[in-house]
Picture (cartoon, rainbow, N blue to C red):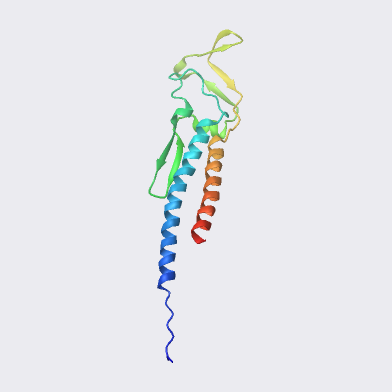
Length: 153
């Protein structure tokens, strides 16, 4: 008969440490996969049109969407084209003025037109980056729930 009771939790603590490491590895992999899916979704969208005139207005929007990293746990995608924010958020109707006293040139009804200013009707927001973020976040949520449940079994 003993007058002491020993409770040894070292095996339990060790299994928690292993589970934590497994979840961290799974989270890092899942984060990379989620960002890759978001990048693919942003580039694959048909919500905006990249015209054939690259060079005149800069690179195609689709070609400027890329992945970045700000530390081991912070990945992101960014559309680097100057006009990306206007495609994402839309624009209000506005006047466009020719610069430096010159004229604007455009084709209307098959005719070449010149004007000192024009009225742009605005553009509808596409939210293509928001949609891509949703794709990545949903994957991340689903996969992390699955990974944590697997580790805790």
